[in-house]
Image 1 (tube, one colour):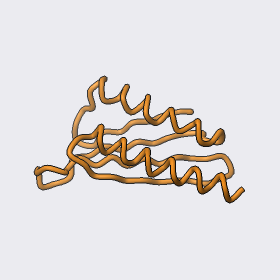
Image 2 (cartoon, one colour):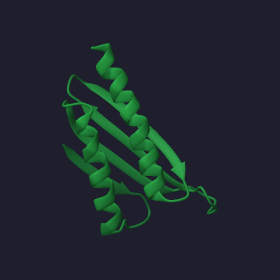
Image 3 (cartoon, one colour):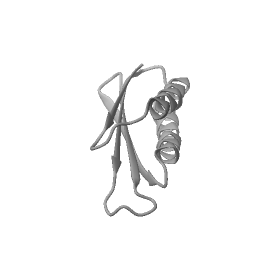
Length: 97
């Protein structure tokens, strides 16, 4: 699975990128047809707590896309929440087939 990370208006640290790679790659346990994952990170204005947004888009075989976007205090927490939401979506997709 190819994981693309895009940080909007800031530079993501190598530590954050490796965390995202690790978390997103675990999604392949739930579905073998995941071809690509796009992760978009941005800081939501105004700069208060709960202003880090992580949006994950999974491109599945069969022209199906899954999407999740979460806002939290840290990017790590937002990615965790988005990955959990995608796990549930992948399980539902698997049950439909």
